Length: 138
Image (tube, rainbow, N blue to C red):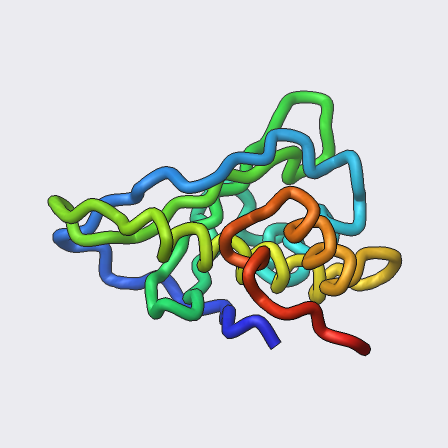
């Protein structure tokens, strides 16, 4: 389990969206597009609202879905941390949360993508959020 949960839109008064990650081509793998459409009811909501999740740190993140002319929706996404208006975000917290959110996405999509493959890739690239964690034997 990743410790990530879909939540309703939080109260954004006194908050700002701090950029965390962008993926402009989720259409490379239609399974990801389908997962986001199901999870956030994008066929109904479309571009009107971002999706929101909470991460293990307790921070909330907004997933802003991008549309492009001539491409199925969503064609991309941007991820933002919802933080207090004047507060910086701790890079270590952000990295750990992003890693958890990526794991949540992989688990949700299923199929040929596995959490174990993601973690192996993280160790290969020495991602701090996973590189020091012991490898799990499944």
